[in-house]
Length: 510
Ligand code: NAI
Image 1 (cartoon, rainbow, N blue to C red):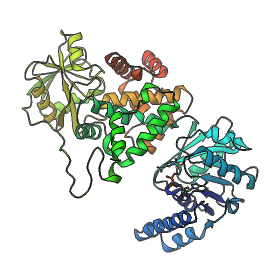
Image 2 (image 1 turned 90 degrees about the vertical axis):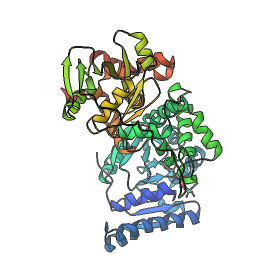
Image 3 (image 1 turned 120 degrees about the horizontal axis):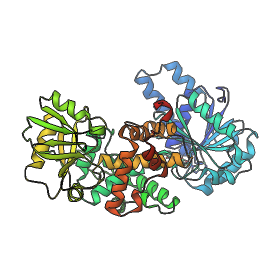
Image 4 (image 1 turned 180 degrees about the horizontal axis):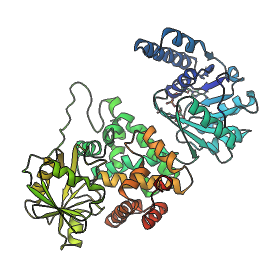
């Protein structure tokens, strides 16, 4: 498996945001690059944006003058498609329309050497369908960069139905040589990232629709407890609701209206209103100098307990015992079903049931307050808790005081099944398991894609291993029972892992 040589010419079609970024990646790796765009003004703008980007890098001291000039000298303005004729690899980054892409690529294919590779940066079209319109479909693959291409490391190498293995191998090795993190996947709707990420937005939108918590609370929980770099709502505002909603719609439509990807009316309302997020000044949040956004509804300070009881194995929440001791709270360990007893109140990690339903199902255990999953209970700054409708007076205050004593901000949410982080992570892991189950990508590549493409703090499958596949499968089964919806059905692979207890990363675990 060998990469293209630095002496190989790279052709890029489309001088917009993506094309201009991809040109920089290839120039940085030492290639000569020809950039073409159908609109001469767009071509000039693209070239100017590349020159600007290098100027900024030089101003910041990241590159010197000689490097900047060398890179720009290797960039050729391709006024005509024919200027790409000698390219070993052509990367297309034009408008997301299969007819236009296929027409331009067929034209360029006729000019290229037979062994040249044609790659599309499409984020939502079928690579198989694009390739099928060309004479040498085996030479065609997806090369899906993320925006901004010079900065974000992930590149999805997408094989269509008839893409030659050697072509995918060359692209993989080339992306690696370009300093990127390549992952392989099959041509399916959303590839890896745009598919596996859907629940991150979808569950937050559902929780909002159900009024489990407001936007600021859900974002604060995803950041402070889930360890995500950004909350779902601020991220959607940044991406733009027109774009994010369109991706959800396209994945939903392409997967034959599978309930897991159902778009949100809340988001459609924003799109209809023209509240597209940061770029229009309004989205879930308001932007600009005079913008006023609600504060995160952190709970008021409550008294810390002097002692708690840990009844049985807390699973992934086990570090809470040591954190309590470190905070000067006496901890008694006794046998039990895996819960905390705080001021006499039974408190448990969410298992996908609402607290009210859980209390009703097992009044003897009497779990009246639930807490949410954290990526790392020691590092979490925020913990969400929810209370059963039957909870005795004082339960919420006692649990709030406990987590506050551990140095956490507490957010009380309504009694929503699966809470925020647990539900989100269960659905992300489930989607990732589906991708693996269906042979779209490997366990490692799926996790790599989510960590490098959308900055998740941990790959969903590695995270599933930490929590335990059986725990997540139970969360999903309880969500499915709570809502009576297909949306929460378990991936067959997750269900199997749950039965045997085998982790997704079996090789490493053995
Ligand atoms: P853009 O709108 O910024 O740029 C597209 C460029 O293609 C324009 O300069 C336009 O003049 C040119 N163009 C249109 N038709 C052409 C033709 N027939 N021949 C030659 N040039 C033509 O678009 P952007 O955002 O750069 O996206 C390009 C592609 O990359 C799309 O397929 C998009 O789905 C994909 N993509 C976009 C990402 C993003 O975040 N913007 C991320 C990953 C992929």
